[in-house]
Image 1 (cartoon, rainbow, N blue to C red):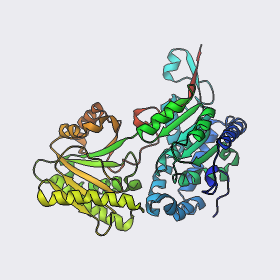
Image 2 (cartoon, rainbow, N blue to C red):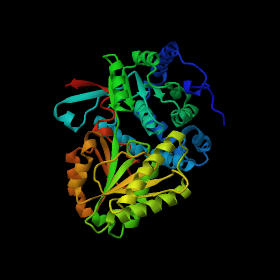
Image 3 (cartoon, rainbow, N blue to C red):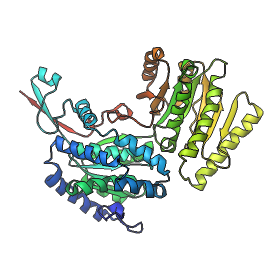
Length: 454
């Protein structure tokens, strides 16, 4: 299957983009939106998204087959990792979940179609209409496709034309998603563009931002701030900077009958998208009281990662990344030789495929990623939060493993500390469609509200 040249990202690598090309593309997107997208109602958009998601979940779907066949070469992820990631995302795109998202964000599912009232609006004799931007620009980072997938879905829900700018090498899977939309509804596909260029291409981005009245950006704090500064004052902006995540396991959970399942769940969080997303854990804090629960957890996790590597191998990485992992491993090898009661490590033989480091120091440690995980013993939640305090303002998700009677107290402590998402271990890289990214509204940052007071 050969992809037609519908999008800028379909051009050969040697093709050079110019600011004029970007401007003309944006103007065409706006025209197409007026003709084909702005006139659509919410139910028809939902039907398109649900049908497309169902197609992607079929093993015989040509675009899925292409993603699994050629995706590893384009993205660096293994076919198994891509398949799992696609399944987790597209299973979320159901009619029920999409309606729940609209109701959560806008009060009613009709809010984008006509003036309507939520329960609170009705009490004040008021109705409201939400209107999406004419043209949304999305600046994405990294190779994990979910942020781009989600941005496309949100843009379609708000009836906005969209221009997705991906980092070099990050456009392949989002590009296939757009081709699948184009294949079923060409007029809808003509309202979205995707391209890739290196960050800091000032003239291209200036041309894009001049046409946008809404922009989203993901990436490092510095790159997100650079986008914000470059926007014209009229443009709405939703920026998502650098975030980290970690897991917390209580002693009751790891010593109970579910211990084996918890190990498998923890490994799933490490393996998902090769630990490259902001929702991937860097550290698992494990409650311990000198019994050795944390050390046992680390050893069992290493065994599970070894099994996972055989069945769902990590993708290819650069020589520089492999050297960085090897250098970090060497540090812990020396520490383990001198103080085995404080440091232990397990790693894949003859490769950098996976690494588990047990370290008694509770201070949060940034992982090398690519399936490199820390396990740290703590006495209780308070000690874990003291250890994680340096990343308090940059913590996205905390994966929890605890007995049912422990859970309410745990979630209160973590939420008061500042975590914006708490989920079961094993679901860290698989948030629901209604997830409030970084604790913020998804559509609220994008739409313009019109109130009608009666």
